[in-house]
Length: 259
Image (cartoon, rainbow, N blue to C red):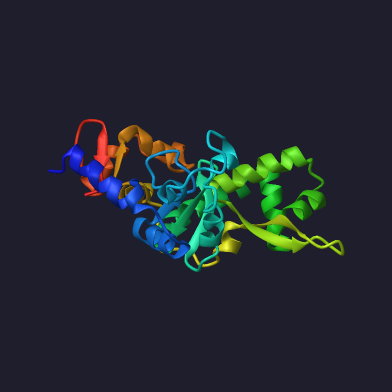
């Protein structure tokens, strides 16, 4: 049996929650991601966080949003996302999460199913996806303009599709023109354009949540529904299924830990 105290100590060590385990370089952060399988950007649940593992004072102590990010290590997220075998998605309830190839294979069938679902019907989401199917990956502002959508409407549709995994956004830096400088833009692609080769096997959200628990080491049972956007697809008896499949142990009532 695993005790709750032992699981907490293991979580503190493996998720680098103590200052003595602070990440010292992007290369070390890449190794951290490889060990855990997935990383959120900031701390918002039991999943391991890249910025929390940096243990660096925020850009503006007490600030919110960007101001709460590490003062000098905040670019590590985008640098890490640009490395081979690292995948940056918005399927963490609309927030960014970094995945390894192994965890991406678990996410892939779910995102393909979400793409197929979003394509059905006559919604604006379906129009956006149909446009990308014909035009190929495109700059976000081009899609908005070519479909004649209001910016607020397009942003809402785009965010919803990215949250579900049907749409993938990639940051692009473009020259600003003769005046010099640069501008940041987003290239949008359907899931099947960003990842043409399907992963083998059917969607298995229990296995995906098991991978999340392995990354987190320890979590309250109620925390698991905060990890991914597909809450409505999760089985009601998720904790029991994780336990039955050997993907979790229960160190104390209300808690799950990785074996």
